[in-house]
Length: 376
Image (cartoon, rainbow, N blue to C red; front, side, top):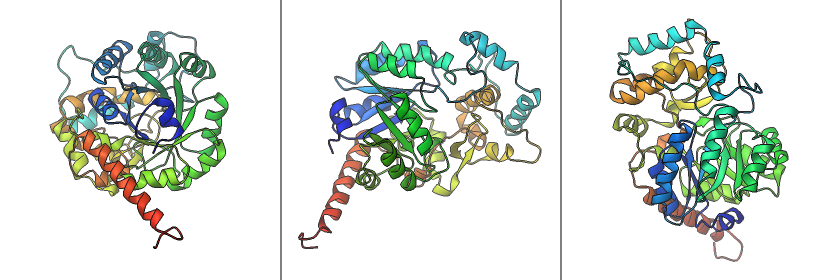
C-alpha cells in the first residue's frame, strides 16, 4: 500500500482523513494514516491553538490543514481587509433571508444564544480570511500538506506552500476543475464524487475517478466521495488513485467531538437520508435531510444566497444548533455523505483504520485469486 504519495509524506497507509476535530487528526496520523484538520470554522488564533495541540499529541507523525479559497464567491477580488469585507458583505444580506432562518429556528424551539455570545459570520470562506489561516498553519513544521476544499488555489498561494517545503492539493468534482488544479501547479488532486459529504459536484465516484486520473496523469490523485471501507479503497487504488480522502466516517468515531445527539442522527441514518442543498453555505453541500433543508426548498422560501453570503444567514443557526444539539436535530446542519448508511457503530479511530486495511487486503487477495494460474 506504499504509494508514491505515502512515501513522500512518510505515512504507512494511503488513508487521508478530513475532520474538524483535532483529536481525530492526531489519532489518524498516529495510526498510520494522514489526518487533515478542516480550518474553515476557526479564526487564525483558534487554528494556532488547534495546531499547537496536534503538534503535542501527534508525536513525530505529519498531518495536514484544509482551507477554503473558493473559485468564485461574492466579494472576490476586492482589495479589502477581512473586517472591511465582512462589513460590506453583511450589508448585502436581504432582511427576508435573516427573518426566514430565524422563523425556522423559532418554530422548532431552538433557544437563542446566551446574552453576549455571538456567532462569527465570516470565517475562512474567502481568500482574505483564508490567507491568515494559511499563515498560521505554515508556522507548524509537522503540517506537511495544505489542501484547498473549493476551487483552484491561486498560483501565488500554491507557490508559497511549495516554497515552504509542503505539498498542496485541491478537491474537484469534474475533469475541468482537475485540469485547472493541475495547471495551477498543485502536487496532487482530490477527485470527490457526488456521494461524498460536504461540498460535492454531480458526478458519481466510479465515473469521476478514472476520468480525473487519466486527465491529470502522472499527477497523483486521491479518490474521495462515499469511501468508508477497505473494499472501496482497493477499488480506488485499482483505478489508479494513490490513496483515499475520507471524511464522513470520522464523524462517529469515539474521538470525534460531535455531541451525542448529532452522533445519534448519523448512526440512525440510511444512505437515502442525505440531500445536496445550498441552504447552509450557498454552494451544493451533501448533508442529512431534515426540516431545515425542506424549508429552504418550500414555495415560500427565499432562494439561498451565494457563498459566503448564505453563511451570514446561517451562522447564528449553526451556533445555536451546535450548542443545543439535543433540541435542534430536526433543523441541524449535519453534513455527511451517502456512506452514512453503514456508519452504524461508534468505534475508535485505530479500529477504523486497521479495519480498512484488513478489508483492502482481503479484496486484493480475492482479485489475485482470479488471476490466471492461481488455481481460481
